[in-house]
Length: 88
Image: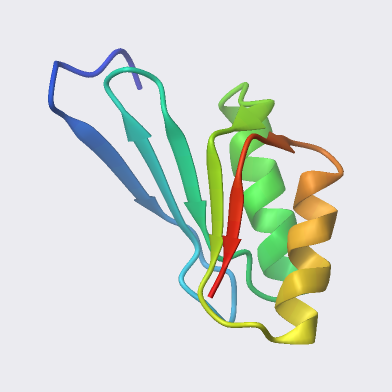
């Protein structure tokens, strides 16, 4: 999609198995990823970000500290730089 108008947020839901799998993009270019899910989910997040030419995200939020979720987040971060992350 193209540029967003001031104040708009693009909200994309990606099927990640377990977890939320949400990607938000603001008008000023901030990218936020919420959860990466299972192995297939982590791959889906990476594929989506790569297809959009996104090589860095501003914030990665993991909503629960499940070991598998953390592992998949690490896999995503091996392909995409995150400026900040938060584990809940």
